[in-house]
Image 1 (cartoon, rainbow, N blue to C red):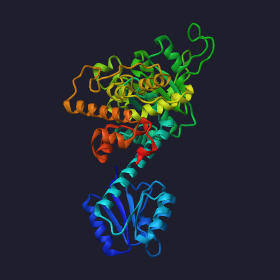
Image 2: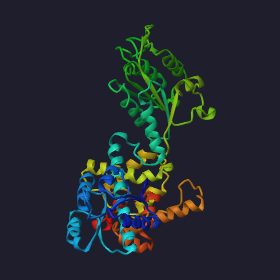
Image 3: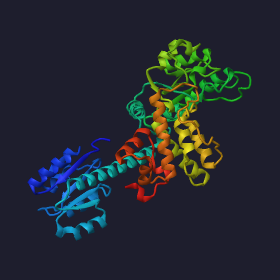
Image 4: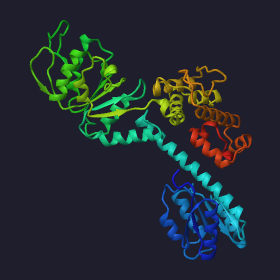
Length: 455
């Protein structure tokens, strides 16, 4: 986390300020020292990832006034007050009002360092939870593009950059990875959002039907064509046409589709009338159309015409750190839909989430979450945490990582998410514990943590 060890130190006693700053810097903190509280307040921002240490008795704005202003801006930002003996009653009142801690002068170096470490850890958890909530809020519109991994952040950023352009887009990704969601977002984030978003799965229609669906037809164009039908292409004029599984489009239809893309016009079956269309095409494929063997009989010229911009959606197994967040959202959505509470997540479920390869990607995870909420998902009592279903032998470091993550989840599960008891059981320092949570993508709040375990 950016600036995770940053400290704002405020004291009008310049000698004490210099000595305290040196103490904290020797303990590994990045310290910004201020002799006037107003300067510290001016330098703060909502994403400040550290803690504030301030003397109480100062001119202009004292420590209590500083704390009150900080609390109004961000009540979760930890403030540690340094007090003289006579200021203890005021400091106790500040603690009751939400200050993180107070330290009386003269203080032992270790007392200050430990208090600051705990405050920074708490701040890190607060910001992490906020980020998760923001991602969950974003997920309402962007599912299954929710995720904090760099790959997903780049994907969302790229979609924002190209959404309002007029280029055609080719989306590649495995089954269930969210290709239609990407196409829908490109439409909604563009100036075409007021037009129609028209989707057609090229692999779901027989060759005798797909041309009628795409290009439309006039009465009598073929046996059974009794009424005029506006095709999907014409219906998408002014909006976006999404062609899913385009690799399944019949060769004869590909020829006609190439003309649509080049000329932006369509000729319905049974007429010689050429109708102009204003549309953007987003095509999706499960295979790499740039690979001759995978492309098969798909026309190379059509591929190059579609391949103006290519968006690749990573499979879920390549962004495992996003799985807990996705699963949590899907479980809450299922609980709301089925009017049930989200069950406690067992260690077996946790191991399955991290150990399974999810060949069905986000769609498979969503269905798993629904079965989990309904209580019909049956898992082995001990799913091996490091055995991929493909039979692939993982490198030793990765197997050890998965095993370590499973041990941490089991300890959290056994202790109801209580941090103190979990750390005691694992026998590791608190900072190491939180580092490992972040490394393995473990969300502690999913283990029904008690309030006392959040410090």
